[in-house]
Image (cartoon, rainbow, N blue to C red; front, side):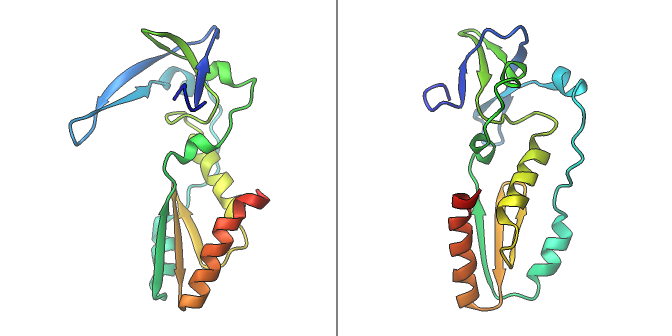
Length: 156
């Protein structure tokens, strides 16, 4: 994460602990425990898309694509003044995030807002968490929607 610029060394006065969580496949996942920070954070009420509404839309269509935005949160930069709040401690020292970390109370809302704005106006496209769902009645419309999605970051 340091090598790809997701995190950087920090001299923040704050430090959340790093915890190890066992994944279902038996491997370990390192997570920052932001419970103390989350308890002091004002909640962002941006709604997360309703999956049942999305499924209702899918029922009428014939062509489907699901795009999984791997580590999508890491595509959203953190404001410089907020970075020290994301600091976490390891046996190698103190680090902070340059990009939006998982585990913050408002990360999902922020990501949802960014995706809503990014995909606004593209017909037959919905997002749920870090997935983009394309659903169309015709193959031609499907290709058009995919092209618009792939070009959307240019206008973001």
